[in-house]
Image (cartoon, rainbow, N blue to C red; front, side, top):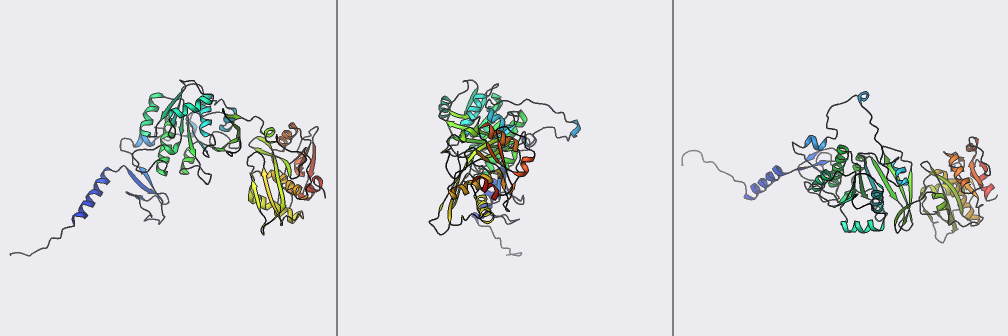
Length: 479
């Protein structure tokens, strides 16, 4: 044979088919994977980032088309930077919910175009609260989008509540965002309620509903609807075992307001707390009571929490806390009993366990109370949680009262923070606390010494000044 012989090496058939299939998938793909640690992009999901080495850090994201890039991602639509002095402030009136406790937490009502995330434990009453809110709204109809229940189940719930008129509430049982968006354009609702955000999904994403990618994409879709159309949107979110709202933390940064619905399922009281609010204060709370006909407002929570208090019992003290601008009087209970184990038990309900350990150490070191051989159980009556340092004095007095089996006078309220040196430190808003105690019939108030200087005189209210925990124990429990 003339010429130089050359050998031809062909690739195995399975290699070429795999490469061909990969190229075809790349050509049709509409998503990408981005590392949350270093923003490294990949065409497919990988367990470990080849750039930074982090594990399980890739999150799927949609790649918008060329014609939809500006419209999908833009909110203002102008694309022009405007000086701050040229911005006109348009005062838009807030929408009243019709539930004063809810309006208080929102900062005075619903802001047009706002996105509110409502989180809470399963069965706490989130859907009930949303249904009652829809019943109190006036104006254009409310669009209720449900992904967990059928329209028949929502009808059953509305029948036992104060249901809105038939034409003022539109129901949509759908989870596909590509179907929901045209419905919003056709109906032009006044308010949108999404129950829940974890069930919504975009078909272009390969991940299942409830994953990080789907939840973030769904929240972004409803946020664009709210900002471009001026429609308030309420997103209902579930809570994980750790107590945080399920889904990516970035959703809480995207929305305008984050509300936490708290409470024990075995207690009738529910607390609506603002964790984040761009249009109001985060210090306000709303207190509700669960009944067969729905949630009822608690206008005087202090009187309700003290209704079942037993007078003349040791280990019980009333404290005056603050929830935002509202004073709240609750009963602090303590039970001290000889331990049956090698290590004494320390149990707290509604109170920080680490702060309880600190108070017990201060009592033993600064006041000479030998609690090292006793089990200590503390409880905040009513099923609520109090984290304010101003309840320290009441908690310490309850422990000493139970240890000595000497009751504290039923007409006394204790207010004060305890330091590590045993000193009683000043607290804020002392005037509101004392006024609330006097309104409920209390005649004696134990206060930090420095707080009494600026406190106006209250007729019928005796104030006891204390500077250390020793003085407070001597005046209330005895030497």
